[in-house]
Length: 69
Image 1: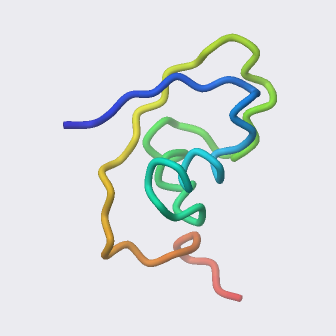
Image 2: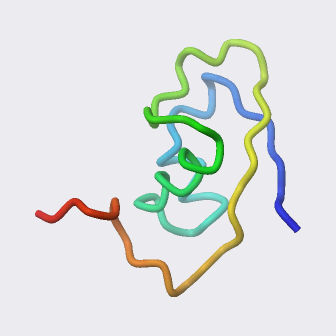
Image 3: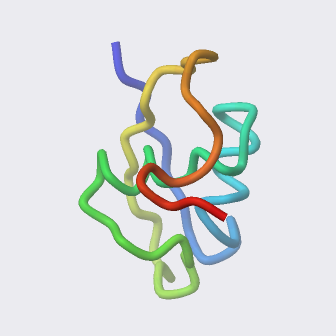
């Protein structure tokens, strides 16, 4: 079952949310993708906004898919 949380600008970025809830800040893109977001910045969310979180998946590679260093 998917977990839903409320976030505001005080939560900073999806990097912070992913680090806290998924244990890996580089998996912010999974939260963004699931919620139709493209920017990890949460500063526009003055009022609380609900986000659906993906399940923790240790097999997920870190980083954004399709982007290499």
